[in-house]
Amino acid sequence: MTSQPPPVRVMHVSKRFEGTHALDDVSLDVGAGEVFGLLGPNGAGKTTLIRTILDIMKPDSGTVEVFGRRFAPEDRNRIGYLPEERGIYQRQTVRDVLEYLGALKGLSPSDARTRAARWLERLELSDTAQKKVESLSKGNQQKIQIAATILASPPIVILDEPLSGLDPVSARLANSVIRDYAAEGHTVILSTHQMAQVETLCTRVFMIARGRRVLYGGLREIKREHATGAIRVVSTARYEACPLIASMEPVSAGGAPAVDVHLKPPATPDDLLQWLAAQRASVERFEKLDTPLEDIFVRAALHAPAEAAG
Image (cartoon, one colour):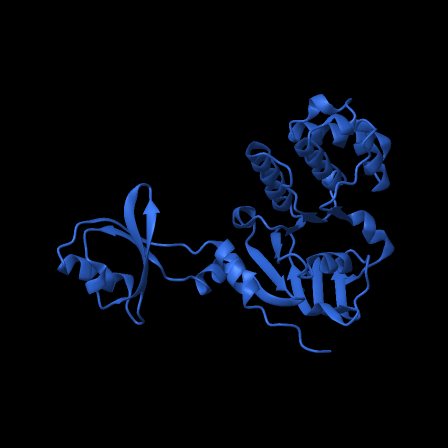
């Protein structure tokens, strides 16, 4: 039995602009039914990578495949793209804009109308159908763009900062829509700086910095590999006397005085707990900390190798 190729595959792609490597031997694949995180600091190469996947830009070398083959003209109607910039007609009504954009993606007028109404209801915007886009708040305009991107049910969607301008309630609704869309078997590439959204939605991520891959794989494995191993402790112990501790940092933890402790290898959290017990210290809190993805992101970006001379 032959396995299906991934809907998106990038193989050893490079792209240069005036001697600068925007992409330097980048490879990745994105499977059906997943929300895949595309991360990187500003200017890292994310937009160039998105444009090569969309066939807006040709790589200097390497190959991009969608649906198991090179990009074909008919694929434009099978890929939805939400750019970071707003691109909807401001002086038209919301319903007319959605129906028009649906028709551009190959929907019949009646199908476009039905789907527009359904997505407006899903995004809690049914009362905006007859309003002009320019009359909507920034957040509601963003939700209209999300609806326009997935209106025709493209098998692949690329979302660039989809939560831009959304309040927490709307952001939670948008995340639910994205999660459900992927669960239906669609491929979602999520480009964002919002690490909380990545941790909520993504199982795999690709981080690019200075045109090169710096992180790629399962989010859980990446967080485990890059964990700092810190332990947050609230106790009556005098930590200066502990031979297991390499460093510690006082922190505020809900009003209680706490320290984040880093141990000397090969000491383990169990060793520290035994030491605290031996000191007859009163322990109110003992927690192995989860390293925030944002911390991993920053460290990886700062330590990304500089571009080689070309």
